[in-house]
Amino acid sequence: MGKILKVYNPYDGTIVDSIPESTLEDVEKALNKLEVGKKIMSNLSSHKKAEILFNTAKLIEENSKDLVLTLVKEVGKTIREAQIEVRRTAEIFRLAGEETKRIHGETLPFDSVRNSENKMGFFMRVPIGIVAAITPFNVPLALAAHKIAPAIAGGNSIIFKPSTLTPLADIKLCQLLYKAGLPEEALQVVVGPGETIGEAVVKDHRVRMISFTGSRDVGLDITRKAGIKKISLELGSNSALILSDKGNVEECARVTVKGGYAVAGQVCISIQRVLVHKKVLEEFISHLIPLVEKLRVGDPMKEETDIGPMINESAAKRVEEWIKEAINLGGKILTGGERERTLMKPTVLIDVPLEAKVIREEVFGPVVTIIPFNNLEEAIRITNDSKYGLQAGIFSNDIEEVFYAIKNLEVGGVMINEAPSYRADFMPYGGVKDSGIGREGIKYALEEMTEIKTICFNLKEGLS
Ligand code: NAP
Picture 1 (cartoon, protein in one colour):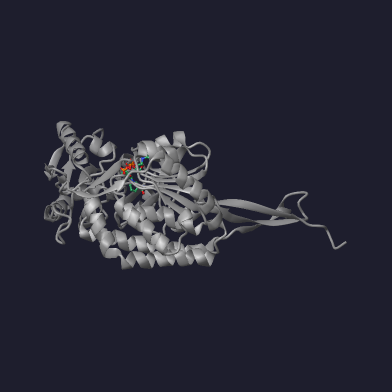
Picture 2: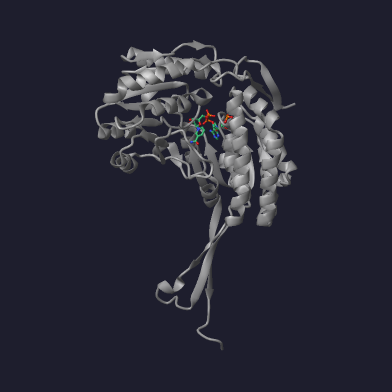
């Protein structure tokens, strides 16, 4: 009898379910199957792949109640947050179904170089083979969909390793994919610790691409162990939102609440630093604090709850310690700061020195720190003074300021008069610096999950 993995409810600590943990032999068996699966997938027509992806979207919608409840129980998401994630997941499969029919190559102008006048050709996109999808705990379904759906569209087979903290909804998703018509050989799920099962997947030479979403440190470890294969990394951040004195203060406060505390701040693009022009600082605080204090923290199963628990007590304790460090360095709490087991009160800090962890590192909890500034150059300098660079936001109604920010912010995406946590699932999404390599968003992930094959015809000058 192998090991059993227990999945806990982060809110009350009860066991949601127990499942068998995969072994290294299971990884080997899975990869052997996927070698067969990659041939099946590369021979599947675009319309058949699109049909599987559309069927999956439909099945997700039909099973949404069960998936929502599973997410609430294993992640601690509120009902409303879980509903949004399930809706998004179906949408991602639908987007991939559409994109399946738009995988194009290009004709190549060979006669643009000497001695190639009689040549003509093109390139086409072909499947890459076996893709590894490794995902984090915070958005189990939608982030898995961002890897599995384009991998299918590209004609690949997939080895999928979800987080050991939240594997249950993902296992259900795999079952729906099989039901939708995906051959079992095309998708294999292995559930087990990253250090053993994840590492075995990362190192295996049969895996031709690793599509990883998770923390910076694990991402770095993957780059060291992967060997020669494609790697796409969607890592963390300490996202900043800038409020200029020419921006809508009230709207910025509303957006800060929306983007700073969703999933108890456990979102890679969660707003962590709000840089506020000193001229509008008091006004901003007067709008923000009542909105934050209105948020109801508690049982994620209750419809009225706005903020559920963090994933486990050690994660919540770490956030509490970082707040203490900020206070010891001279920072002040404007609201929040208290913890009850896994529940962390939504917190706003100010006057925190820039070297504090709540500013420099990724908090991944419901903590927002306000940083006042004198001019936009200073705000952008502070924003860029980070190892991360996923997305940033700016509230300003001055077009010159906005373009200055677009040009100078070192990030993968700039949101204007919107939270940096905004993401539409079709858009190119990803970071610079330690926030990652590559882009997701179906069309862009598909480019990464296919290889270019160049074709060249050597033609005679005339008919002989
Ligand atoms: P994590 O600890 O890095 O884990 C992510 C996945 O990697 C899990 O499945 C984990 O396995 C696995 N793993 C751990 N060590 C591994 C290794 N040595 N080799 C291969 N796989 C390994 O991240 P997390 O705590 O679950 O998620 C939070 C992080 O994800 C945050 O930093 C957040 O910013 C980032 N994130 C980024 C995005 C984005 O789009 N940029 C989106 C969401 C989250 P286990 O099951 O053993 O944990």
